[in-house]
Length: 264
Image 1 (cartoon, rainbow, N blue to C red):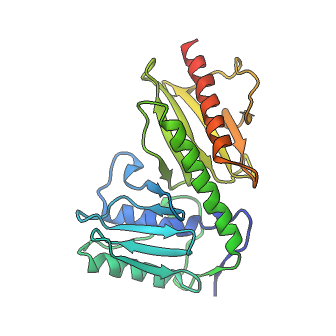
Image 2: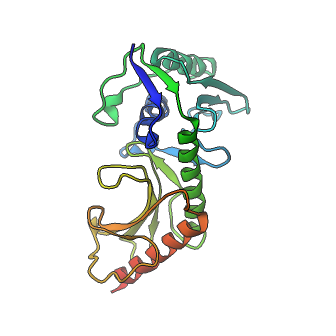
């Protein structure tokens, strides 16, 4: 029997599969759009939740809770149903979601396809999830809450920005800021999970003008983080000493630098 173990300090890469249950709900129950806005997720504060967009006119949503390691169905009338994932098979999870959708008058079929979101091996019906290290899950939850609050504080100082979203392909917590001076100048701010460029969770800031990244040659010394040539943006790695204030300072300085670039 295939087994999925939560035991790696970089566990966010592994629980990517679990988050795709939420993505599949968006793909299954919401109208297809030109961009993947119908599949992006919402970052909720509190105990570290990720949520779908409303899946019905009544406001039903599917939620993943880091703190309880569970998939939850929240109805528009504030009822909450929970499926604890430890020991559950892939088939049990998809059946539970399909049943909850039907109980709440969502009659479209629920379809889970890992091929929709990346080069993953198919998950068999008897694939089992096991929670082996709760500390790892708590660490990730803390990083997500820290990043959300740091980003939220920064966005309060800006105008013309998007809401804070979680993009399902890479699980970034992110927002896009459009400057007053140049409506074609976009600055992306967020947190990324460990990837091929960086083995750590990290905050980032990256800007674009007319779909091209700005020249980094005039970027001076940074007080927070460093310029990442692979990303072509500014990066601040997260660790146990990271703070909301430090994240806010990083985002603020990055925006100031990139605004100066856009004007010059």
